[in-house]
Length: 172
Image (cartoon, rainbow, N blue to C red; front, side, top):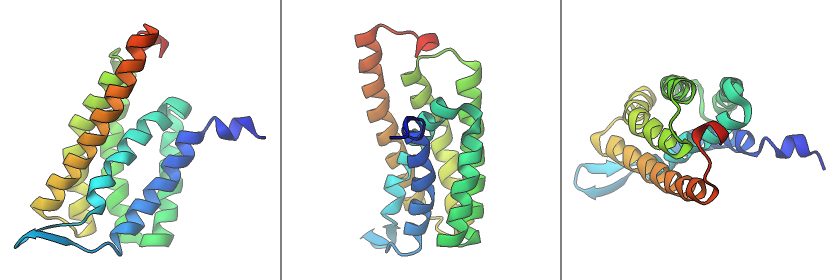
């Protein structure tokens, strides 16, 4: 078994998740809740990508940008250049937020994951949905909620593990 490849599990999930979610936008139907209040259900799961990126960045550091470029190249093939460009712009912005938080702060990992999503989710959602042609207030709200629910759950799991192990941000 190639243990080096297994050690990149979050990076591989990240590379697979980006084109999968982007491709899903091409076929997933809009769901109408209240008249004009419609959203694409894929917006709910987009938060997984931001959280998985945090873990991928822990595995490979700033090389996560290479992983993102690979995922966007696959997106061009699966979903087209418009979605790839919108996705790339949104990820570049949220990646900058992550880079700042993970490089310049000494917060616990759980705090960095939460703050990263709190800051990046609204920006990422608006940029992607506007660029991809899916911008509606409902899609933006559902996307942000999906991202924050994922971030809160993951941050709580990490926080519990931090408390159990007694590790600080520098040793995590």
